[in-house]
Image (cartoon, rainbow, N blue to C red; front, side):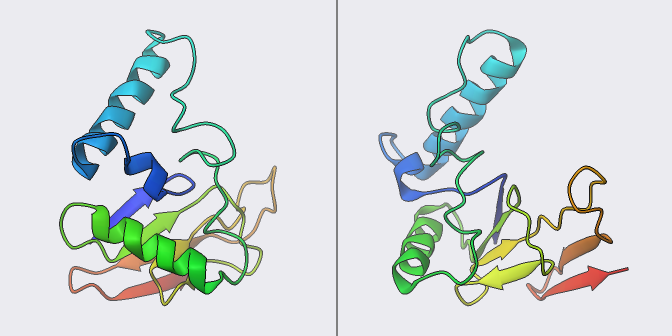
Length: 136
């Protein structure tokens, strides 16, 4: 019931394929080919301001109703009963935080010494769907 994405998955990343599953599989194949050196450029859906590795759409502070609506529509397009997206990439200075009624969890706390050197935090998602933040 959870999708994990480096920075965020947008509706436009799922378009142009037969299904959302095929869109994700296609992105995974394209990224793998790039990492193996079989492709000279990273896949378009992964790079750029709105790429799955770079977007900050769901990571900045309080999100507006329209952004939350877009997020929930994207989640509904995914196979299964996906309830939430977990994203990193954008440091949350106050620690792990939810937005859009917990439809997105932002988990980058900047624990690297090269960033903020914050104490570690972990997002725990239990089999029953309960979510909690564990702190040291």
